[in-house]
Image (cartoon, rainbow, N blue to C red; front, side, top):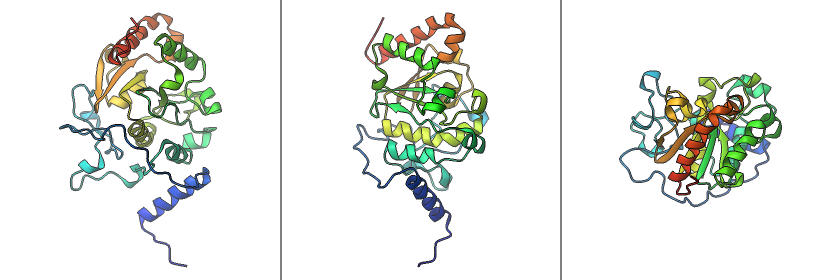
Length: 275
């Protein structure tokens, strides 16, 4: 038998293949044709399959006023190479889901979760709904937004004349934080390559961020949800509307009117006004 290579790339490739095998993946399908070019021709970079290192706090800013923080591999300059562990070769959402299921980057989350919660919905959706993290119900069932907050989200979508299966729903991180605490910055950074790859494979035209954690992590900003809502942001060519998380609305019903204003703004941007 040939001697096994000790190179980091060989070890990482072997670990990835073993993770896919353990998750039941027997073959790697060809990627589906892209609906639009990635990246589109523009002077600024677009969503990356390979993200850069986390942006330093002093450089963090709302996407509405700054340059993108994640660059495609083709745009990396000499010496500007991301860590190998940030690279996901997954060519479909199914393969990426199996990779996420085997992830153990965050020891606490990996040892306390029931299962990972990857995402659900139309893989070619125009609209992605982005939350922060799975809760107890989501951890048990393996699907995002299935508890009381999810029931309210379904009603919001219905009011917008949308069906749950028409959109794609996912979270910033794929494991439930113990006690439903907020994800730590390190946990969000560990999961960010999976989020970016999901967005690249889905190629949505619109993203709706639910709550502070989702909005701040996607847009790389420290602005509060109160300041981020009520306007349209640009994330590498994707229109982003931020609003309050359904769990917040359950505790503060008076804020529902602001979320409805935000959803009407989103639907106008999508060309499907409901006001």
